[in-house]
Length: 78
Image 1 (tube, rainbow, N blue to C red):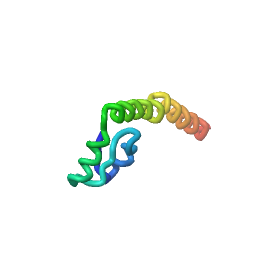
Image 2 (image 1 turned 120 degrees about the vertical axis):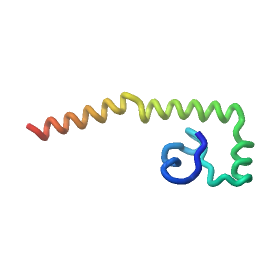
Image 3 (image 1 turned 45 degrees about the vertical axis):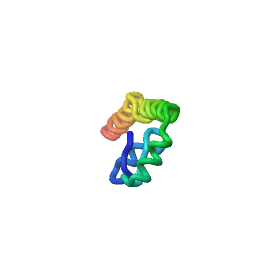
Image 4 (image 1 turned 180 degrees about the horizontal axis):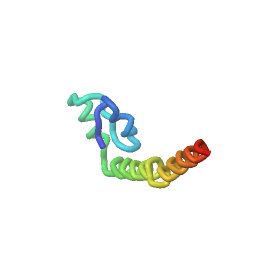
């Protein structure tokens, strides 16, 4: 993903790890980003994005969260 450094987008895209966060859309910013993105860089970031998504936002994390929430809810009602 390529996003601008505005709103909540930079919180979702980790610069040069899971995508690119550009400071603005000036010719200089876009040229710097484009010139630094080759096939190796794209492959590395693509792989890291996939891994990050699985480990941080995958089904197992949701199962753990809801398991804890349900456990706490059940113990509060006892």
